[in-house]
Amino acid sequence: MGNLSIKKEVIGNFDEVCHRVIEAIKPIGFGVLTRIDFDQKIKEKLNEKIGRCVILGACNPRLALEAYRQSTDVALFIPCNIVIRELDGGKIMIEAMRLSKMLDFVKGVIRSESIEEGERDLEKVILSL
Image (spheres, rainbow, N blue to C red):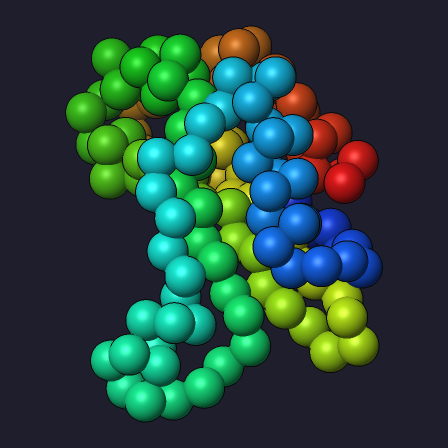
């Protein structure tokens, strides 16, 4: 199941990169439903320290509804995660799950042109950051 995600490594301020991602996905119909500061939760629950890691629960309502109408099992994959991780040397990794790969797990969902286009748009946006 290779090529599971769209990845882009950038250099910058972590909080600014998070903000840039949130703003960049808006024009293609995605919004952020949830934000989990994963590193803070690990510190809070386990008293362990990891590099900064934010999980954005993003959703394109039009595409989600289209897939949901084909199979309610799609709800198990909503929202789509975009992960922003701090790497060494001021580098930051941005990763977004490919929509097509999520749908591979659900029987009966046909990858329509709009879903394929949504993935292409998301890839363009992530790679442009």
